[in-house]
Image 1 (cartoon, helix red, strand yellow):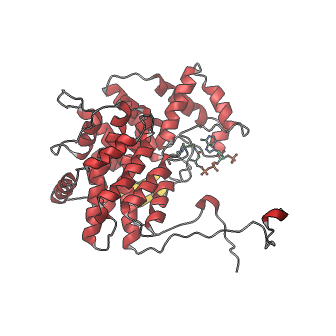
Image 2 (cartoon, rainbow, N blue to C red):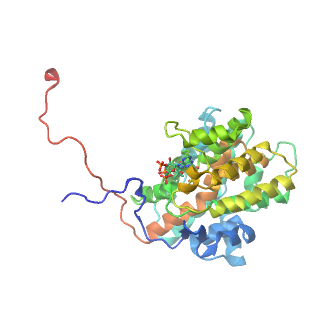
Image 3 (cartoon, rainbow, N blue to C red):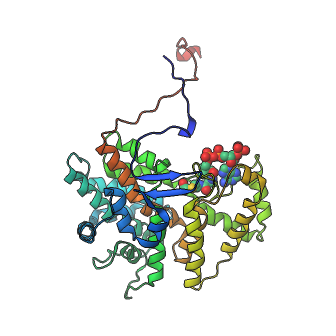
Length: 391
Ligand code: CMC
């Protein structure tokens, strides 16, 4: 029998049952394991949220301590991985470097592929959480031709990431606590978002029992695209272009509405949120706070606010329920923290890592079948073969 249901882009297809993230697109609700995103962003740190997503409960102090210690014990990245890093041209985009390096990690950690026991699964998860920030920081340093930093076991997860990205040779490392708080918050807001493009990719690759690292490497590639995580880089580039162009937001609004123009207002619209993106609300407020705390004035923030105001009052955007999404203001904060534009989507990947891991773990533990969608065939019927000299 033929296939009768067709759902391009899976707009209305549930691919799994999941107990991790709840999302109500009409009401603008996002919860991890039942906890409101607003509470987590305000009151938890990123490692606690990672634990919550992966293991289902907020950790006790002892559980968090053990988790942290286990991760620190695995933070070493094989010296030969550096040769792979060295092989990339300086112009390489850090997302490509990150996905390749994550895949390359498999060769140096072959034990991470087989995860039949709980212990094997835990070890693979801890290894990846430990090594991923190292690779992300290296990808940035490679671009800047800076010597690598191995981090410090005395720092928390996010501060250590920051050190590995920003420490300077011949200088003691220190950072304002507001910077780490802002980073923590951004990473938490990105930590999971149910069955989005990259998470579905992680699940479908993992469903063939390819290992965790291979599945995450595929997820990074999916996230890179400008319609998904790559939007955060695209937003800043768009805002910069508008600034260079004299700040004429009306012109870009018209372009975004013109169906003959491929331009879209980056950072606007969402497959599921049709009222507002709760993450965008928190990030907008945070952008104001962080810039204030660090004493930074960024004209691009004013352009962003102007665009938002115009869009929210424009029938095109109102009718289509297009609102600012998580990526609209995040780049302004990343920039204020000194993070280069090409690293924005890497920051998203660092935040999303616990979510990808949690979803992969759930998929394996529930013994989900291999992901294998069907199709509706629209090609030729049977045809007689013609040999080359008769064509
Ligand atoms: N600018 C102008 N028009 C838009 C935009 C936009 N940003 N987004 C959607 N539309 C229009 C679209 O042209 C279509 O119009 P019509 O009905 O006249 O054909 C209508 O709104 C519905 O859009 P769609 O593309 O069918 O919706 P979708 O659910 O397939 O796509 C989206 C969702 C996020 C890919 C899309 O809104 C978009 O491309 N946004 C810009 C990129 C972006 O900011 N992505 C980040 C998403 S948030 C988190 C993440 O994944 O990083």
